[in-house]
Structures are given as structure tokens and as C-alpha cells.
Image (cartoon, helix red, strand yellow):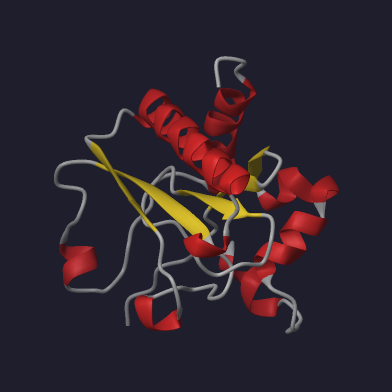
Length: 163
């Protein structure tokens, strides 16, 4: 049997089950932003590093409110969402120089949402040839960067006054 170690997952596996949405919990615990790897908080949304990334730099823009669809957003929430996606794109390009970026939202469990019911948009940096036999044959992704390093790399870019 082959083993791939991912010790950071133990926190997730050992957490107490609860009824509260993970994103709602993070939205309320603003004093734990470094621990939760929140990169930026806007008026209506926050930017966070995905704890189970598909690639280095995988971030999400998460709505503060527990809403499921883009149609649930008011105009100011929609405008800020677009602005934060733009800021994420810039930060990822500056920090990682990817060949491209996948961006998307999975609306509903049937669409693949890991946290269904709480609107969030993924931005995933990509490089030519970044998929390999591990993904194809082993159904396993290899992420070469520690999440703490990702946080340090991107945090400063969200503190940049250029936006």
C-alpha cells in the first residue's frame, strides 16, 4: 500500500461535528483570520486560502451572508464580488506567474459543492502540464507548497493599497 501524508487534514477530521456552516463560522471568528488563512475581508465577502487546494495558490472568495446563488446577492455584494475576483487574479499572477487560472463556483451538492448552500468562488492557478499520473491514475493531487507559505505569499498582496 502506498501512503501520502497530509497531516494538516487531521484538524478537519477530528473537528466536532456541528450544524453550523464552516464559512459562517469563519465569518464570525474574525480574530482567528491568520489561523483560518483569511487573506482579506471586504464589506460583503472575504478571501480565504482553500484548505484542500487543487494547486498552489488555490483561493476562494466567500460571501459573508449564507446565500446559495448569485441571484441572492444585492448589487453592492455583486460589485464587491467582481472586484475581489479581480484582486485575486492579480495577486495570483504576481505571486505564482501561472499559465492560466480556473475560476468557478459549484452551486449545489449535485454540482460538486463541498460546502453546499454558501456561495463561494474558486480561483485555481494552473500551469501547462500541471496534471500528471497522480491525478489521472491515483485520483490524488500533489500540492508542492505548504499552506502557511501560500498564506505568507498572498497576504502581502492583499495589503497592497493598489488593490
